[in-house]
Image (tube, each protein chain N blue to C red):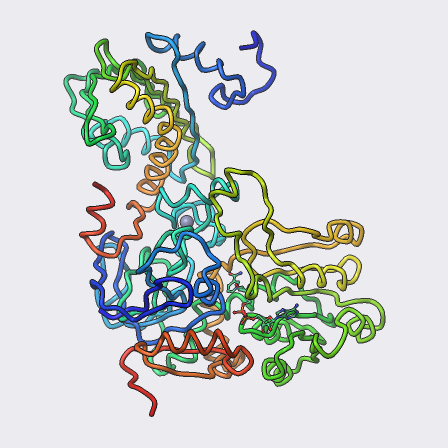
Length: 192
Length: 395
Ligand SMILES: NC(=O)c1ccc[n+]([C@@H]2O[C@H](COP(=O)([O-])OP(=O)(O)OC[C@H]3O[C@@H](n4cnc5c(N)ncnc54)[C@H](O)[C@@H]3O)[C@@H](O)[C@H]2O)c1
Ligand SMILES: [Zn+2]
Ligand SMILES: [Zn+2]
């Protein structure tokens, strides 16, 4: 990784393959981390978006892979997330930063199935609403199952984060999540 | 319910499938009273469009009666509505600018990936038009689920028959927007390539917008006759050399505005596998562009190019030099149907626009496969097939 950056693009969009390592090692324990960032502009005020996100139990509504998030106390929550082969991975996450209407960040506690951290920023964009930027850093685990999970986490987070943000935007802007299912049965299958 | 489902190339069938249900608060369900087969449906019939799945219900030009409403729908049971073919939310930035076909939220999140990769940003959803455009079930059926029913469908007053307003769903606004994109000034000469429904409505619209002359180009005599009925001069490109004819007819200047209403025609919407194409980054297949190329070359210096015709992939030999050197302007896009519906409904009610001239065949929904075959095999005489559930069979 070059010592000095020459542009203003987010690190997650760097063409240097090792750019992520420097950042992820700062955020979480472990090596070989990966990072992904996505931004979306949502035609609603930052305060509304922040408030919805701040209640972590809301997140499974639009995050497809997240089965549940249960609060433990004001700062700790327990996450259950879908993994390949019908399995789940779990961790406790600690809220590390919380600036109302601007920023939320969390990091998994030691012993997580997948070490990870997330950061979501809300920036006022005037007449266009709010720019929401999500940065997810994670440490793909080793071992046999680890490889499977890594496969999922290495390929998926970028796509997953993008889709989750689109669903968040749909929910906030339109009050619902778009589906092309025709019947309840199809919808249940799609959301399973 | 009964619905026209796609099963493969030149294989469409009327199947019995589960009725649609309200799934989101803003949904409504309509009972279809009239639906049309579009030229664009033939691209599906010919299997030029990827991401089709056996059993997909087709149809994006339809209207009907509201029979069920979600908690946030503003429609009432019993109202008669025409449904825009573009599925748009009405609440995003683009909808706020009335750029409905660019809606951010019309497509399910997962279906947005392809558009994001291919075009840089995903577009709105469309009814009955492959999974690339959302995988929404279409309107060639007895019932349809309509998302965002509080902002899409337009309520039709009693006393106007279905056939007069059905084309508000797609081709009338498309022809109108094509003329609007040509930025016509009084005294202009406008040339229109293609006398299908879109071209014919563009001809009518261009005159309404103050064009002095409209020159319509096609090779089907019957379609050229229809253009002539609306006051256009015609060029049959099989009988005459289009560019030479245009230059003589415009005193060597060229048309002030040109409209390409041909597009893919019968040949290759996308190269067969879009996803492979993206992966390979080797764009060997290209959209056919004969008409747009000719339109650019014929257009006068400083003129306007309007392109309602649909292109999906990449083009070869696009006359970028002529385009730049002559200082042309190009406007295009999927139609922002919701924006044009109210004004055009008024124009129909005031008798300023004739829509029913286009309909050459009326059939029961059960006869839809026959309708597709006829439309596919005989474009000269078959200008528009309208399907009506429960119409009964012709002798
Ligand atoms: N922008 C939109 O939102 C939108 C909506 C509907 C349709 N469309 C597109 O508009 C186009 C026209 O639609 P349509 O339903 O009228 O189609 P159509 O197939 O019925 O009509 C096309 C006509 O073009 C003629 N033609 C073929 N090659 C020609 C050439 N080289 N020069 C002149 N004419 C030629 C054909 O004979 C035919 O009559 C299609 O590309 C369709 O997909 C766009
Ligand atoms: Zn159509
Ligand atoms: Zn929208």
